[in-house]
Image 1 (cartoon, rainbow, N blue to C red):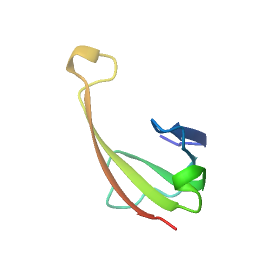
Image 2: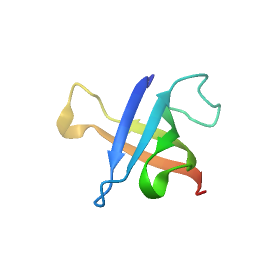
Image 3: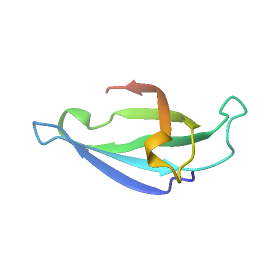
Length: 82
């Protein structure tokens, strides 16, 4: 998994966070997959916020057999409000 690109998340009040998905060297502690995202901009209550998240994935089964395929995701992150 190599995430690339941007995502805009909008909350119920209409305030938004722009995040960038990045790829790089997979941490040694991550056996199956990962995705790293960082907040790079925000509006309203999120203006000036910084954040970083690391999603790690554990896959089991075969992707060719959806009835017996699953993924477990763990998210670790930090954020700082202005």
